[in-house]
Length: 136
Image (cartoon, rainbow, N blue to C red; front, side):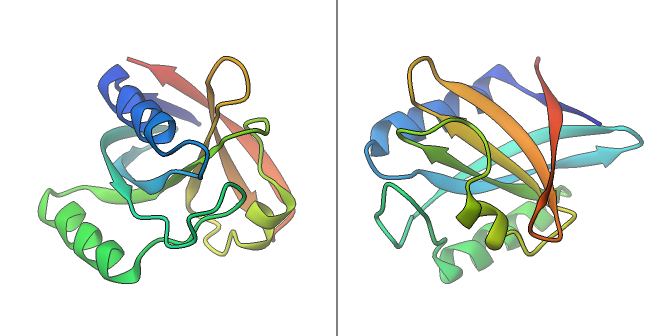
């Protein structure tokens, strides 16, 4: 599975993460799913209700509004993103524990050193598969 991510959308995630440092940035990712490929079409930065450097909670009201907007644009909800201000771009134990949607793609941007964005599928709260992200 390949994920195509526009450089502008990557920049939006990066600026959101850097702007909220040292707390975790978070948001939703929308696009189109095709056979063997996901094309990201939009990134929606959202409020982290936790205001924490170690975890995030999306605002449910904001989430409802964004999901309606995603549908109105004709896109699908692909998954979410969040930043790791001081740890690598891999799912933490808590990330795996909270990964309830096995169809979702979980994007993680590490700000430890040079920023690195990775994407994952997480199944059964433990089986992690990294997906290839191509900037286009």
